[in-house]
Image (cartoon, rainbow, N blue to C red):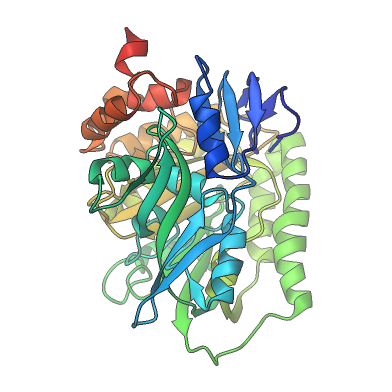
Length: 448
């Protein structure tokens, strides 16, 4: 993310969103943050974390707030059962949060596979991991502090201002700027990682049922290499703390840096130049990633280095629809002639009751499609968007999609209620921008 100086162009990590804010401000504390909002005048205000959203969520023509100076664990409240409630400042990056929690003998129940985001940005866009008994990050939030459109600092939780809490913990920053987040966390734990190449047909045959891949593992996901029938599967399960079987440094470097980043960058460059090579290269890549098993702290297993720049769209679909959706995507790729060098990722989460969660009251599978940054993505992504629409797919709020409020109303049962909370909290659109207005609807005063 580009964030330097007081003025000038800002762009996100994926280079899919840019803006020229009038001011860029980095408040040092909550008081300074509130002062910026109070003094904004007619300018709109948006906060940015790592700039890792693929959408225009952080774009503004007014004041762009960086929360990078507002970091760290503020308070740890332990319980007798070993769990805890931890309050963390909103700009804290997930990687730093994981390290800080580990120092206290604690951890998050689940994580996504990237830890560069700020905690505020991650929950506000609906970041999730994988595990059919585990919900996304926003469902782990027990309370928030935020700065309102009037510049006041308020607290919200399920017991205090519950409706504001719902939209503050997952609502694209539409009701205020988060200054701190309180999370329910668990004792630190270790995972055994089993990563194996499997034929796609075998994966689909063994997905479901009580002994299937989804149910029988704490965390399960797989990557399908387009134009092949090959996948890489990942099964992560809890093990005792004394089960220590690390990867050797050489093996870790070869797998995570050389193959997954260095060679992968080279093969994407090659296929961008010669698209006809994509099926052959994908087949080679799928075979190059060999099986491996190791144990490590949960955050070290769940998070992977991602250094090859890409664009992404992800849809949440009913769990049972995965085989149908993948078959439709495979048919479209064969008919269209499109060449895709990036694997397609499938993950799973539990239902939850977070109003704008992609997994709201539904056992959910996530289908994420990616494209290398130097290749066009719109045709591929819109084709997948049409396919998942047949099974009521819900778009990830932080990733590329083209749905508006009317279509989203039919997918998110609480969207109208969230919109009403936003209208009350920010009637003048202090925290509005084009993307937020597109998906949630424009605040009444600005629309008029």
